[in-house]
Image (cartoon, rainbow, N blue to C red; front, side, top):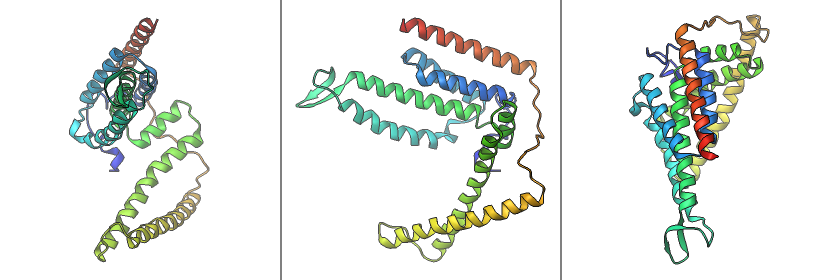
Length: 255
């Protein structure tokens, strides 16, 4: 199983849904929460995304790494952006010429909420779909075939390239290589990058020849054909209804 498929082999309510329903729901909710400005609706989105994670039977300890990575980056913004204030800005405190802007603090907090909502939505709705099934579902949604082929090849062979890098790094470690802040380390990793590029080119040539031998003509024939059930239609309808309520409420608050 590939690393990106770590959440796909489970059995839950989210896993049992039609992939097309999950893709469209993720797209619509992600777009809405990306532009929503009201705290109440962003907090509602955070609760909603947490519920989806629970329905997908994904433990937060399993996604702690990706959440920690993005939140450390956002923490830097959280500290730095409110410090860039104008002279007439309202501040929590002011020491000499240094102040902390309330307006930009709220702005950064909204970015923090949006980012976590999107991560949880993508994890619960898209990471629960096998990447091959995801490609087939995108084809059913009439996306360009070349884009789908690029997606499938990228996912498949980025993983292989990563495994190749791990083998090269392990080989270097067995020969006594110890990374450090020195010229030898920089040269070694530069050689890694060059060898990885050369091996990738060689592998791509072998893959292209193998596919030609198998009469590949640029088309992937679908094996999985999706059939929406009553549960899929009901779930999709409820999600759409919930989204419309959020959009209406957000519009009413803004006006």
